[in-house]
Image (cartoon, rainbow, N blue to C red; front, side, top):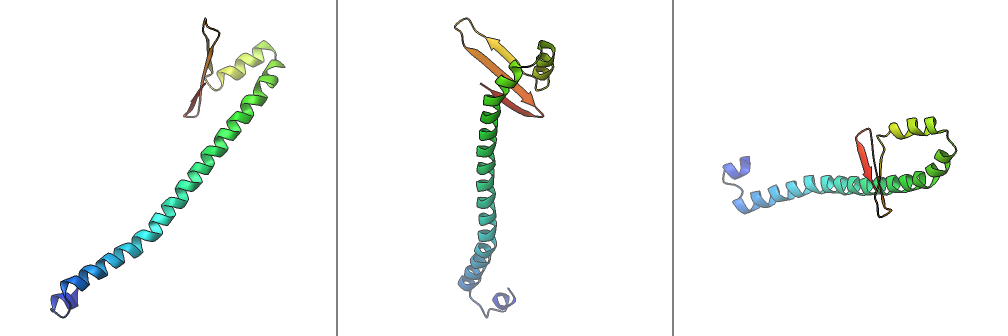
Length: 102
């Protein structure tokens, strides 16, 4: 900036240097954000796989419980099951801020 102010450097070179500096700063930040987005997508896939795994295992385990125990388990995640006349079932649950519907 001093060189520009002393008129020893033209405006075009100052703008070019400024753009280079911005690019050098922005590129690592963009890479960090891309990496973070990738990790988030990976965690979301893992979450879905885990939920599907539990969804397959849990019904068998619940069937083995006494009705009182099963009721206590259903209340823990705020489980709500609605049966419709057409035979379909809606299941929703919430646990520590996470909500899921089927």
